[in-house]
Amino acid sequence: MSETRKTKVLIIGSGPAGYTAAVYASRAMLEPILVQGMEPGGQLTTTTEVENWPGETEIQGPDLMVKMEAHAKAVGTEVISDLITDLDLSERPFTATGDSGTTYKADAVILATGARAKWLGLDSEEKFKGFGVSACATCDGFFYRGQEIIVIGGGNTAVEEALFLTNFASKVTLVHRRDELRAEKILIDRLMKNEKIEPLWDHVLEEVVGDEDPLGVTGVRVKHVKTGEITEIPAKGVFIAIGHAPANELVKDTLETHMGGYVVTQPDSTATSIPGVFAAGDLTDHKYRQAVTSAGMGCMAALEAEHFLAEQE
Ligand SMILES: Cc1cc2nc3c(=O)[nH]c(=O)nc-3n(C[C@H](O)[C@H](O)[C@H](O)COP(=O)(O)OP(=O)(O)OC[C@H]3O[C@@H](n4cnc5c(N)ncnc54)[C@H](O)[C@@H]3O)c2cc1C
Image 1 (cartoon, rainbow, N blue to C red):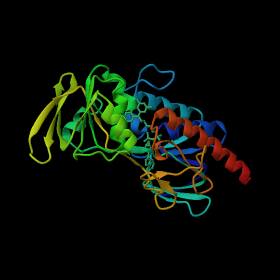
Image 2: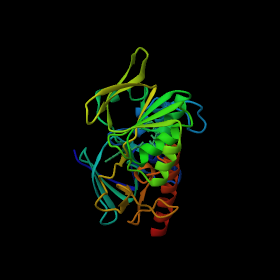
Image 3: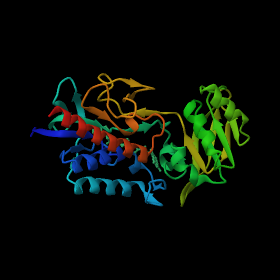
Image 4: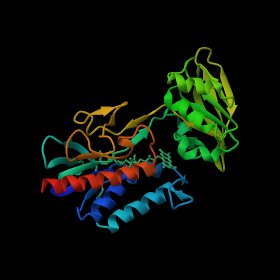
């Protein structure tokens, strides 16, 4: 049965940004509702070890997100399993429509819908995700100290990831389907001067290969785009670095976006182009894309929502 729920603060998304916003909004007595979406817990539920969340030397991503959800609930957040399919920001209270049929009316909205790494869509890529295949060098580079690594891509993301990975890897092979990079010149110069990086032009990833027990990557098979010749390269890690896509479907036509769809926020703020609508986490962040930065922005969004609501009264 369809119902209408009224709340001071509606938080859309259940990643680190959403749950942190929920903790702060609850403790400010705003009685927020948080709608979880299709991926309760967000991106960290798709990984294994997280080693850079302060206070936890090592924690499994899904376990960290279970803790965050429990924390949000313990301080009073109502966590709802629903997917927002439409968001009307033309007047306050704002109106969100849930896939369940529920309508949510909110005086302020915190958008925390995150982002998704782009993947190639290969079966072998899926099979080894979290077991040698990654899309985040900052998160997983540390696991490949002294190992050989493959980076797939040819834009800024790929060049930055390849450069960063040389801090750990004995060798980084950058596999790119063209014979030149589409990155900033300064980054290309740095890459070309780095003796640990070997570009492999005109090749695409055919297959990630590895062991079954324990599951782990041992190398890749790459194909020359002109000759079709297949080459095998040994490696312990494969980083897919073909970009990220912010989950902006609800707001791409109503809020200002930039850098490929990331929601624009005001400097040092999570305020968007619509008063009362705040955006936090990977949805706005084309640069750092970390759990801890997302959580920080979730905190900011809740505090700013609190100030906004106080000013309205
Ligand atoms: C494999 C992998 C490993 C990683 N490892 C690390 C690591 O070790 N350390 C680190 O700091 N970072 C890591 N990251 C990055 C980190 O996960 C992200 O920076 C962080 O999760 C972003 O948080 P977020 O809250 O902005 O959004 P996300 O975690 O992306 O969560 C988005 C949420 O929004 C919800 N949502 C989306 N659309 C809707 C909708 N229409 N209605 C309702 N809800 C919706 C989703 O269900 C989801 O809950 C990793 C990422 C990946 C993919």
